[in-house]
Length: 154
View: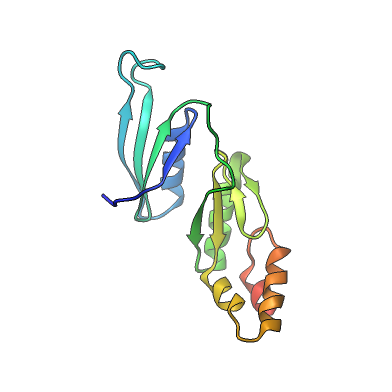
């Protein structure tokens, strides 16, 4: 087990969300599902927490109730190498109630924020020619889903 891992608070969708996430990302799996027992604030047998792995990242999820919700103050950053991968992840994560955002950010149907970014963006922004790097930045600022060819053309 990794020493530090994200812990996600859901109202009552932890298992549903975990199953969705492992269906989207390769090398992913549900590790454990625990359930509330007698005397809990919800019916016994209701899913309490889910441990799962997304492409090597261990994540914990809790059905803790409606007291807290996700904000854009935290997101999961995904390095997507190709436009095909960006398109596939973007489409999957914005489906069924997800929301596209600016500059490669999106919210999934559960309200969790993601950044779907190609590593080439960092390389282009670090171009030694400040004018080129500036054009890349300006191009990125006009995008929702990142378009690698559009960045390279800038």
